Length: 245
Image (cartoon, rainbow, N blue to C red; front, side, top):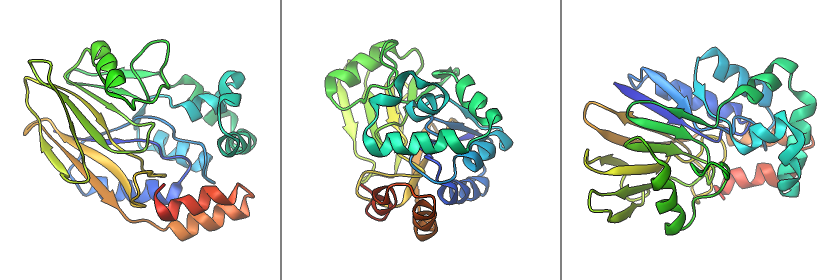
């Protein structure tokens, strides 16, 4: 079975629709989302409705949490906070309740879906150091953990001897996994990549050949930029899409 994992759509409808069209042609049977359906971009309602319509299983990202509850909203930078306040104004009650209902983790037989971290008290921690990688491995109960949050694709392998190896997806788009190892795999961002490549990204997991393939795609950034300006969101949120930072 082929399974697609998307993440960090961030209200970017053009990127989401492009990714879903590619996924539909790839023989994928199921799609999961690592969260942050909303935030930053101009089309939060449409993106959430697309996730609901397609039956995509999603976890809750920090922006989803910020929109559906006030408790963490002021932990964001000024750009993110302004976009969250915009999102809270324009989404329907139904979408707000959908975002509020999302779980922090989805655990399947072969993999776990989460947004930022598996550390119970810090679900939105950024996994940026080897110490945090190892701490998250200690909470991983399945062979693979798929996540997002940093918007930078990355694959961390912990072999049977507890040796850690980090693989850069920029150098290797397809990786065959070892069944004796455990993995933490960041799938990148559909709607706001930050690895210096403006192309959106998503991942396909093939459980038959036990491989993961990172897919990068072009989409209509100019249209998204114009929408951001029209909605009077910070110009920076549109400009960054062209650079991928």
